[in-house]
Amino acid sequence: MWSGEELDLDAYLRRIGYGGNGGAEEPVPDLETLRALHRAHVAAIPFENLEVALGRPVPLDLKSLQAKLVGRRRGGYCYEQNSLFAAALERIGFAVEGRGARNRTRGTALLPVTHALLVVTVDGEPWLCDTGFGAQGILEPVPLRAGVRVEQGAWSFGIEAEDEGILVLRTLRPEGWVDLYAFAPQRLYPGDFTVMNHYSSTHPRSSFVGQVVVQRPGERTRVRLVRDELTVTSPDGARELRRVPEGELVQVLDSVFGIELDAEDRAQLVRAVSAGA
Image (cartoon, rainbow, N blue to C red; front, side, top):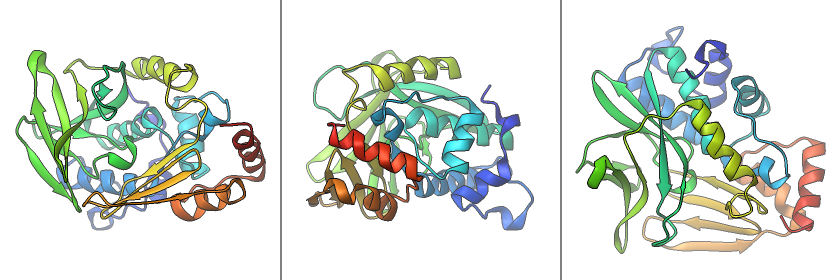
């Protein structure tokens, strides 16, 4: 389903710095491995939309994903991140399904289903896995049961149930629990990710079109760059904000987010930002 047989697993594991299973040749499909892989992936591969900002297509075939996120040491957004993660999990032997979610971080607006996530079943229990929600995302899998509360680093997450089988991922902030996204039990497939990806990468109302968006979650802080605004958020709600001049953008992408751009991409990105991306 996720083209796991095409994945260069060793290269992927090196990319995320995974060293689990006591030196075993390949990871085994158990909960300890799932947690370790999820944390390693989130820590190593940043959330970014630079291809969209440059007006380029965002292919989701595994060969393209490996070349970009693994070979070129770039990042990606949810469809790329979770498609690659699904391929790795499938290759290892996990049972992986796709889901689609409505983002609820923008107030009361009813947004379309544009976020892609995964459900992974281990020993009969489903786990929410999501390596592609950016700075506000989970660091490791969350048990997919209503009423669950978990702590990950300095952050707290929970799952709540609504009508029609809808489940909601929530996070605890100083003002209380807030929704991150809501998703139905309907299984999605790679082709569904492709359709959502087309909207997110091309539609003028997409939040990824016309601006740079780069994010990274962390144990103690969350870092976001939107256009030229770099924000670091702490668990108590405190925020540090600074503007990033055009001449410093490439350096910030490298030093803060670990995004490595070649000379051509650097030049094109500077031109795109100057033009208003």
